[in-house]
Length: 492
Image (tube, rainbow, N blue to C red):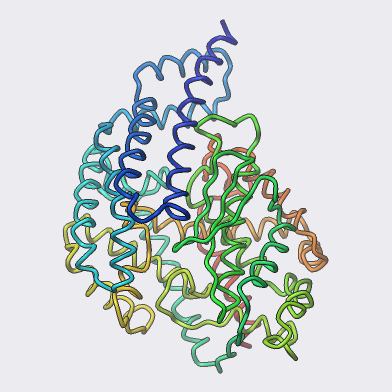
């Protein structure tokens, strides 16, 4: 009976995980290969899969399976995570979940066309539908302190608007004087291309392979907005975009998405075909991509190892440049329009802006039609940047097209977590910088696998942070890291 109870739960979870993987594959294809006119039928198919997966998670029988499996000795972390999923799903009608998925699929193409035309008004009606549906979703959780909590907790379990506001306030207070001090220093200049796209891909994949990219289990494609998708530990998809004029966009984008992929690929095989075999939260997930992209990818140790190879591929643009020259250029701090291209120092301000706008929408202080003006005003206030068009402003991110309000805060939360893990990794691996300079990225990857990746969702983000750092979420390590790094680069 013991084995039978656990087997029954595992079968239920396996079929639910298969539905999620199928839906993810449809979404990956939509952004990489699907012809534009396929959006309607794709939305219907995706909506059906999401509704079926939701219905299985909300199934009252699942509660009994969880009780029996727990009594039989099933892993407590798996039972906790699935029970939380079940209790949340049971509150939300399957029809609402399906409608949200259908609108997201329809909105993808509309957003792409609106961004190409820099016309927010063309996208606004679908965004209004998304906001209305998200209000319905939030209303399923009347006990939350703030309606935005219900949206955010889809991606960062346990997060609250009040706690995130406090953390972001502390972060902003530390970033503003640092950015001001840097602004008073001479600009270090740019890496001037051309950087042929094919050679960019070559360099990016060579580095990614030392991180753990596996040609037999991974693939890379182009997408308008880079992302990672996985259909299991042995089927990891990353996407990127490249620009011949800028090495950083393609190179660091690949390192970022590879960081996400390593998380998924590093989860213990015990959690295959379960709904816990993925990242425990989007904040922890983002910590992996930000750590590899920036703390490793833009470090002195990394470029001491890889600059000679980069010079072989790009001899003219990199001629005469030494490691210090490259470091100053790839780490230049310049307030900019586009979040995904932002430097480390200003990046979180882009996230804070979006967080504040989303909260204002769901508090009723801001209407969808007013988003472009509010966006532009905050860009000027926070970054001193004038927004020339909707394409470079309110339409730049795909997230609102997908209806994923509450997602943006995880980018800054993940950046904070990355710094906490980076500090802990240096304590655990005292010669980490030397290893990176020698081309050894496997030691760091395996440390992350041991302390973060392997658990999937069987440990919460708070539990992981407590085990690794002895404390909870803390902006201080990120501020220390940024002040140390840019203090050295800019002689502050």
